[in-house]
Length: 162
Image 1 (tube, rainbow, N blue to C red):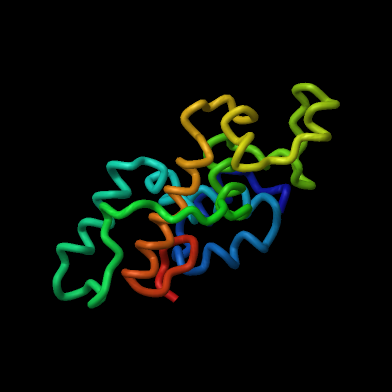
Image 2: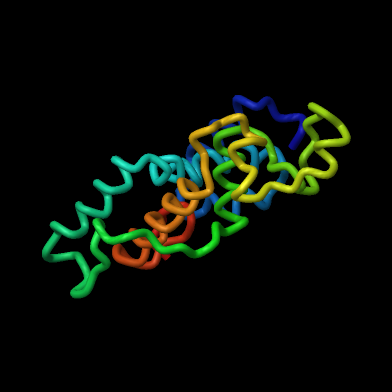
């Protein structure tokens, strides 16, 4: 696969149905690199309060497709911990690199620091250099994404129906 030009691989991946992108990521590292951003392109929208709130509200106002019982979009957010997988996906999309502490993390900024650094919701903002990415923002985005998925049917992380 390494002999194929990136433009060709990008074209191949762009023609694969979204429901098959999870499997496509398993082909090789290069396919994973091109499939990942497409597969998880919806994730950053859940980190934006206005966009995520609007998505949940659109289900509230959809009388035919919404569930009979729904959590109020104005209620307080759950206080469950941020999932490591969610946090890793957000990191990879925002930073375009593997998260610190993962076996694939290769970036060298301060060698000793990077070897000891393990990505957590508490240090996400500090390690990423993005002050706005607080633990609460990560948790809120994760919860709104899960909430929307639970109300709109069974979805995988890509948003494709199972």
